[in-house]
Length: 389
Image (cartoon, rainbow, N blue to C red; front, side, top):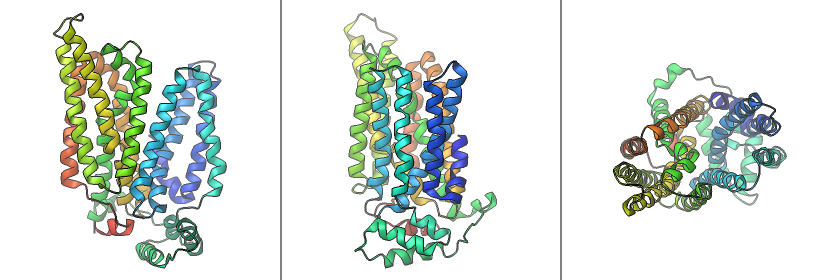
C-alpha cells in the first residue's frame, strides 16, 4: 500500500523506466533479508521491502505497456502483464515442492537482477516524454517503438494535441478531481481494482492448500500447483481475446463465470456439513467444490484478473495519471490486504459462508461493469480520455 501511494509520483517525476529501476532495489534487498533471516524480524523487514517494490511495479508496468502499445495490440500486451504474474505464481508453487524456502527467496532475486540492466535497452514512454516537454526524445522513442520505416506523424500530432493543455509539471489538486472528466474514469478504475480483490481471488490462491484439504484432497500442494497451471492457461487465452472480444464483454463473462463457480463451491461446502464424512455424497461434494474453485480461477483469469489493470491504464487522463493511478492501486492493495487478513478467519467460521460473500461481490461486478465501464478496444488513449469530457 505504501508503494502504491508512492508509485504515481515517482513515475511522474523520474519516468516509467526510473520507477521500475527504483522498485527493483527494495525487492532485491527484501529477498536477501528473507533468505538470510536469523529471526522473524528479518522476515517482516523483507516482506515490507518486497511489498513496497511490488506496489510501485503493479502500477507502473500496466501504465508503461498502455503508453507504448499500438491501439490494436494494447489489450493483448496489457494482458501479458497478468500472464507473467500467473507464471510467477505457478513457478513459486512448483519450486516450493522441491526447494527450501531460503533457496526459493534467493531465486526470487533473479528477475530483479535481470530487470535493472534490461531497462537500459528499452525506450522511455513517449507519452511521458511528451508530457515533460521533451519533444525530440518523445518522437525518437515513438519511432523506435513503431519501427524506423513507419510513418508516426499522425500519432505524434495526436499525442501533442492531448498534452497541449498540460504544463510540464502540472499539479492536480484533489478538489479538481470533482470534474466529470476526472472523477468518472477514477471511479471506474478504483471500482474495478477494488472489486477484483473483493472477489476473494487472493484468499482462494493463498489458502488453496487449506481449501483442497477441506475438500478431501490428500496431496493439496500438488493440487495447488495444478491450480496455478490452470490460471496461466486461462490468462493466456485472455491475451488472445482482449483485442478481439473487447474488455467490457470479457469482464461481464468473467464475473458471470465467477458467480456461478462460487455458488457451486458455497452450496457444496454448506451441504457437506450435513452429510457423513464416509458417504459417497460427501466425496461427490468435495469434487464439486474443487470444480467450482478451478472454475472460479479460470473465470477470474479470463477477465477480472487482467482487464481492470488494462482499463485503469487506458482511461486515466495523462495529467492526473500519477495521483489517480496511485489512488486506484492503493484501493487494490488495501482490499487485497483486507481479503488476505480475513480469508483464514472466514474459512474457519464457514467455508460455505466465505464463498457466498465472494459470490455476492462477483454478482455486483456484473452490474458495475454493465452500467459504468466503457469499451476501450480499438481506440487510442487520447480518444478514450476525450470521451469523458
